[in-house]
Length: 66
Image (cartoon, rainbow, N blue to C red; front, side, top):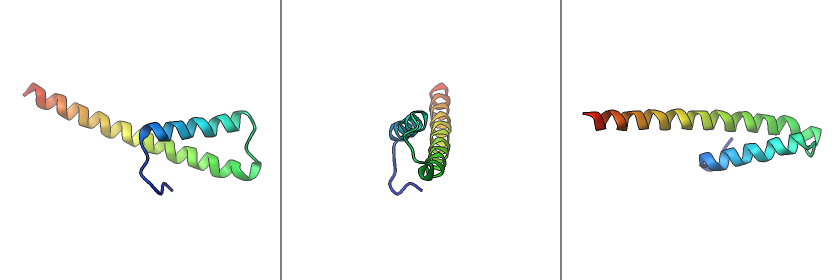
């Protein structure tokens, strides 16, 4: 679904933009399903990015203790 690699910050900004559109009822009913699907994808992407970053930080901290 993502054609280019996006940053965590860009993904969160897009989620916030879509949610604002939904809350303000700016989205047409024809767009709603697509936008909800996009938000779901972006949230999964962000979760994976956070988990990966956490693992990397834990590894680095573990190496520092050695």
